[in-house]
Length: 88
Image (tube, rainbow, N blue to C red):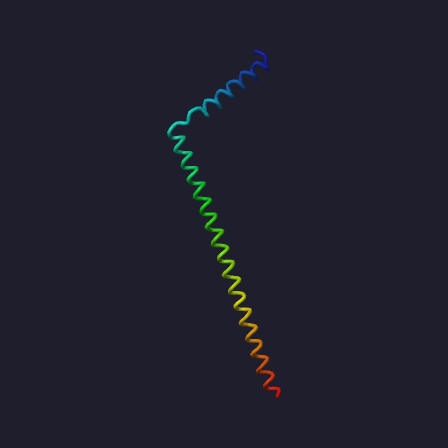
């Protein structure tokens, strides 16, 4: 046999093998696909929940930082008043 004949035969056999694998999925294949889809959905839901949690934590940290800044400003203002009252 010529080399090109071998190549053609291998291509035909490979094509048939791929076609046979994609033919009617059996019950185990269908169950596996359902499990894959469920796992993907669960992963997506967990990712969204993690994003929401991260956003909430960021907002809480921002509010806490703002409150600390406000408290520091108030303390500084009171310190200035005490200092001014001691100068008089």
